[in-house]
Each structure stands twice: as structure tokens, then as C-alpha cells.
Length: 282
Image (cartoon, rainbow, N blue to C red; front, side):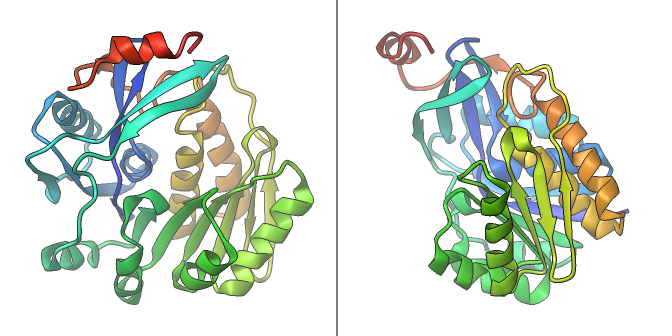
């Protein structure tokens, strides 16, 4: 069985429209999606000891993700307050809580036993990427927070580098993919929202259209695409096959609230009603 670990960010996404909080964060999401796609997956991160942490614990346990290296620390679990316009998310406010951490020697030894390690740009772990990539295939999500300098520094470490296109055109996506590949990544995934996605290597480019979706909530669609692509690459599937599967899975994610579901009533140490009142229409 393919074994992939995600290390880094987590959060509870608090939906004003629903009054519910959903476990999330790129790395947590990817660990869950990988497990759903058939991998043996693990999540390495840090949460508090509060209601948000209990919601995350329960979701990961029900999904069968290995949480043996999930830290429980004193302090608040990270949260993000989210509104919606139609099905598109609107980020209102956030607090990283105690989610930022430095990997221990035990963590490094743990992740070295997997087929690949996924880390996101919002995880605060960039300084540790060279060591992780030395011993393991690295998947890294730049999201849309990339610069030429950051690509030049991190892409050479990557088995899979994922980026979110900032412009709608195919030409932009193609140029971005080429930039990342020429910088040294083995594979580059460019997600393009409703225009699908592009996967590039030095020798080939694969493209897929977005699958038809009954849009409820777009949060987590990109993480779904990354997880299915990484699973396909590590499993040795044909790119055309796993790209089409990734598009279908991303569409499925758009059909329910929360990146991975598992909504529970919002229970945070902040005044959600005041935030709701200050953001009418969300």
C-alpha cells in the first residue's frame, strides 16, 4: 500500500452561514483525502486541547488517518472564519493559534518511512524542507503565494510542486508550469479552478478540464486535486487517468460544506456573533 504523510498546517474553518466549524488546513485535508483514495496516510501537526482540537481529533480518527505524531499543546487551536458569496469562500479573519511547530528528530525519523511527504506553504516549515527532501520525495503546495525567488529556492527540492494559477489564461498556466519545472521540480501541478488543471514534467504536459459540479462550497477542491495527483504519481498510475480522477474528486468536494466535512457547532474563544454582525451578507 502507498504510504504518504502530510506535515504542517491545520485549522477549524468556521462557517458563518452554517454556524458550524469544519476541520481543515491544506496538510490536514491532504492527509484525509489520501486516505480516502486508498493510501495509508498520517498527519503530523499541532493542535490545542479545546473543542476545536477535539473536532479535529474525531474527524481524523473516523477517517483512519495515523495521528501518532499529532501534538496536543496548551493554547488555542488555529481557526479561520469564513463567509460565502454564492459557493465561493470569503476569508474574514483567522488566528494561527499553536499550529506552527518545529519538527523533532522523532518527526524526521517518522516521515522518512513514507513514500512521500506533503507540506504546504502556510505550514511555516520552509526552513526544514532541504532536510526532508534529502531523505524523502517532497510534495509542496505553493498555493498562489509564489515568487520567482521562492520557486527558485523550493522547486529543486520537489517531487511534486503545486501552484494555483493567478490568471485565467492557459498561457499563464503553461508559463508557470515551465518556470517551476525549469527550476528543478520533477512534476508541477497547476490548478486553475473552473478551468481545470495542468500537470507538467520535463517531457510532457497533461491537461484536464474541470468536472461538472453541483457547487455548494469550493473550499478544499485544490487540496483534493493535489492529493489525488500525488497518490497517482506515487502509485504509478497513468497521468491522464489520475488527472481525470482528480477533477472528478475535486468536483465531489465542491458538493458539500467543509473541505472534508465533519461539521460541529462553532465553539471558540471569540465572539462569532460580533464577527457575523460586522460582515453582513456572508
